[in-house]
Amino acid sequence: MEYPMDADPRTREVADENFMRQLRQTFEQLPNDIPIYMFTQKGMDDVFAQTNRQIVRAFRELTPKVTFKEFDLDHELAQKWNVDRSPTLLIAPERISIRWLGAPLGEEGRTFLETLIMVGLGQSNLSEQSLKVINKIDAPRNIKVFVSATCPYCPQQAVNAVKAAIEKSNLISLEIIDIQCEPELADQYSAHSVPQTFANDVLIAQGAQTEEVFALSLLKLAPETIFIPESDAELVESDLVIIGGGPAGLTAGIYAVRSGLKTAIIEREALGGQVATTPIVENYPGFTQVGGKTLVDIMVSHALQYVQIFPGEAVIDVVPGNPITVTTNRRKFQTKTVLLATGARHKHLGVPGESRLAGRGISYCSTCDGPLFKGKKVVMIGGGNSAVTEALHLHHIGCDVILIHRRDNLRAQDFLTKQLFKTNIPVLWNTEIKEIRGKERVEEILIVNNQTNETSTLKVVGVFVAIGYEPAVELATKLGVELTADGYIKRDAKHRTNIPGVYSAGDVEGGYKQIVTASGQGAEAAMTIFEDLINPYWLQKQN
Ligand code: NAP
Image (tube, rainbow, N blue to C red):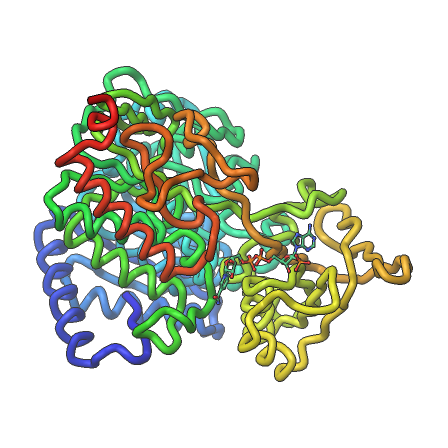
C-alpha cells in the first residue's frame, strides 16, 4: 500500500506493522513451499533484476516458505524450462508454469503477492462459474499478459491468468510481461496499451476482463465480452446493492453500512473509477497532493472496514420489482434498493484509424500506458482538466508531448493551465485531429487548423485522448430510469430516480465531476436510502 506524502508517519507505521503481521500469519498457514528462480544474462544486472532480488528478499524475511535461487541464462535449468530472456522469474516451475519477464513493480506487486499466496495454497480460487469454463479447455494454452507498473487495471487481468495457470497447470502456461522491461516484445505483439492479453499468440483481450469473461476468451481463443452464468449461481439477499466502486459508490457503502443496511458494492473494473488512473489529485480536502491510485487505496481500505465489495464482477442484468434482481457474472442479488454509481466512460474521437489502432499507440490512460512512450513523440488531445493533468504527467515521465486543442483557450482550471505554460509543453491551438495513420501501429496524424483550414501531418508514435466522458447509463436504461436531455440520470434532490427503490450518485448524474462532489452525492444517496427503507416514499404516494 502507498501512503500520501503527508500521512502521519505513526499511522503509517502501525498500518504497516498490522499488514506485515497479517501477511506473516497468512504465509504460515500455507501448505506448500514457494520456490522462486531468477535467470539473468551473465554480467547483466539491470534495475529489474536488482528489484526482483529486493522484493524476494522482503518475502523471505516474512516466511521461510519462499526460497530463491539465481542462475545464468546458459545454465542447464534455463534450457530445461525454456528461459531465454533476462531477467525472468519462475515461480514453482516444478509444479506450474508462471513466469515474469521484468519485475513485479508498482501495481504488479499485488499480482505477485496474490500469486505467491495461491501457489503456496496450491489452489486457484477460481469461481465455480469460471471453473466450469476452464475445465473445458483440452489443449495447451500459452498466455501472455502485457502489464505496466503504473496500470491499476493490470493486476485484475494478470491474476485471472495466474488462476488459470494454477488450476490447469498441465495445459496452461503464463508469461506476465512488463512492457518497460520488454519493449521489443511489446512491439513484436503491437501491445502499446496495457493490459493486453494473448493466448497462443491470438489477442484475446484489450483491457481487464472479469474472471469469467477471461476464462471464456481463453477457452474460445477469441476476445469475448459477455458471460452468462449457469442457473446455479449463488443467491445473495441485501438491502442495498451499489453498482460502481468509484468515490460515490465507496462513500455510499460506508454510510449505508453504518446506518445498518446490508449492503454490497459491485465493480467490474478497477475500484476507484477514473480516480484510479488520475496521476495526481490536488483538490481533495486533506491531501495537498496525492496520487489518484493512492487516494483510491485509502478509500477502498476504509470502505472495506464496513462493506462487502465484489470486485471483477459485471452486472449483466437488472430487473426492477420488489425485490429488485441484479445478476452478475457470478451471482444473483435480490435487493430492496439499488444505487447506480456507474460513473462515466471516456469519449472517443470518432476519426478514421482510431478503433483499428486502439492499443497500438492510441491510449485513453496516460498513467497506464505512458511509460512505454518515454523519450518518444506523442500528442495529448483535449483542453480540459484531464488533458492538461495528463499532458503534465507525460511530460514529467519523459515523453515529448504536444497538446492539441480545438479552441484557442483551455477549459482546464487556471492552476493547471499555469503549470502547463510553465513547463513549456507546446500547444497546437484551434487544431483538430482528422485521421490517425499507421500500418501496424500509430505512425502519424492528419490535423487541420480550423481557423485557416490548413491541413498537415505530424509524425508521432502515441495519441493520448482525454476529451471528456459519457455517462454509463446502460443499466439505468434497462431499469427504465428516465434520463436528462444530455443523457445523464434524471433524479430528484434526494437522488431518487423515477423507478421506486432505484437511486443514483456521482458522475452518472452529470453536474460537477469532482471526487469530492461524487463522494458527497454517495453519502446523500445512502442517507436517503436509509430513510426510505424505514419509511418508503413509494408506499406513501400510493396511500
Ligand atoms: P471536459 O472537462 O469535458 O473537457 C473535454 C475537453 O475535450 C474540452 O476541452 C473539449 O473541448 C475537448 N473535446 C471534447 N470533444 C472533443 C473532440 N471530439 N475533439 C477534440 N476535442 C474535444 O473533460 P475532462 O477534462 O475529461 O474532465 C471531465 C470532468 O472531470 C470535468 O468535470 C473536470 O472538471 C473533471 N476533472 C477534474 C479534475 C481536477 O479537478 N483536477 C481533473 C480531471 C477531471 P472544448 O473545450 O472546446 O469543449
